[in-house]
Image 1 (tube, helix red, strand yellow):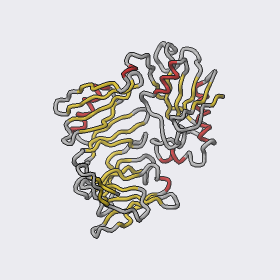
Image 2: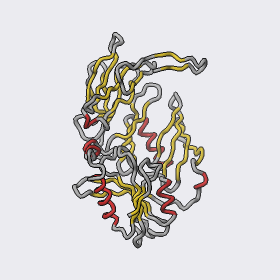
Image 3: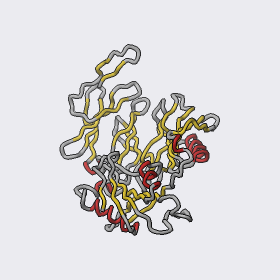
Image 4: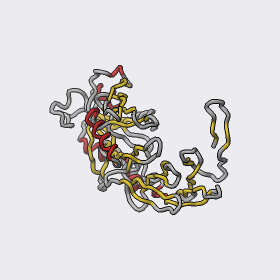
Length: 340
């Protein structure tokens, strides 16, 4: 681990990784405090630096939790850290860890999906709010101020926003709106006044284009799993706006890569490109997709091309299609287009 001076460009060695660590967490003074070490059996060991400046094993979590558990930050003062953890539960929760005793306290959780993100005070790293992404993103406050922020931003921008940058005094935020029919836009939010000012459209050439709404759906797999999915229909095919076409349309099954990834609600250029050309587009979070708990992600172990593929077939049957294409684009990191 090296630090580089912005003024001089000089680099300083802070930590040499002689312990086969997979990653580090530093405190606000940029001193390494926690490190993670993958073990041969798939489990992960978290190490801490003790008073002597030596690394020591702190706690461990099993392979089944390895995709849904990870430290996030060391909070101000260096006495506590935040992590996402599914240990002892299915869905990944926001947890505070005492770095001296190891005591863990659950700060936020959901029975629908993993905690997907946390708002942190830029000066103290204290949690202010958290996000859960099931059918779409839902924010919940952890402080009275964050409750007001969520209410203001939802009223001004709708639910599909994300805080992407903050000033150090936490008074001004850059917020991005991700809307299927509006593409992406950036806004400045003044926390003192509550004013939200649009800065720019990220794809101005799409302003006024006939972008189509995205419809979330819960599809049951043949063995009872819930597959969170998203459907986009071609222009003019859904006169009553209920997310069902007036008559059958050709359908493209747009399969995300990974498999440890997920599709989410929002602007998707592939959905819009295909819908504009007369196709319905269906994206399916098949088993092994992330964000829906460790049971769901681990249900895909050794099932690529087996039950994970069955999930895609079940989604096609749900759609009751006349014509179907399966699309795996290079951008999604999975092979080439194939048709059936």
